[in-house]
Length: 218
Figure (spheres, rainbow, N blue to C red):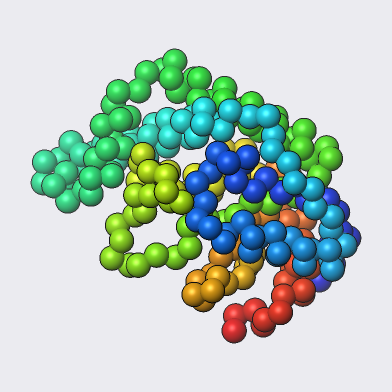
């Protein structure tokens, strides 16, 4: 990380052309943060890939159910342990039990298509930027947000959809601080890099941190 990033180009995906429900103020904070990247010799271009993001999300849900749902099945099958599972965990297991091999295969095909889309973007860009979250930190007593920006969330993790994109693409990602809203709530921005390009992502994040108006960890 002592070697400074040599600058480059960043693709800003924002809210995916309105697909993501994002709490007001988050995009503006991230766009201001991207402006600071200019001090580190990075140029930013806003774009939205030609992708069916709803189908991509459903592929993520399917693959998550196949993984986490099956992993929880042993607890689900034990009546004493099942009573200790939260409703979201029970939902994951019960959805996993209904999955078919063709559904899982279709989800992996969709994931591979997204991976290829990212590779094509990395032919033109060094990094992809997105908000780290779709909501600002909320009250600890809130189980999970049922609405974001006036849009109902149809599952317990829909409000975290933006965090699934790097995972589905098999790409390294790092979170950097974007700033604070008028109530002092923090927000971050995720930087996604090429597969196995972890060091380049970390160096870009380190270069960005030198532009911040506050001390890291303060």
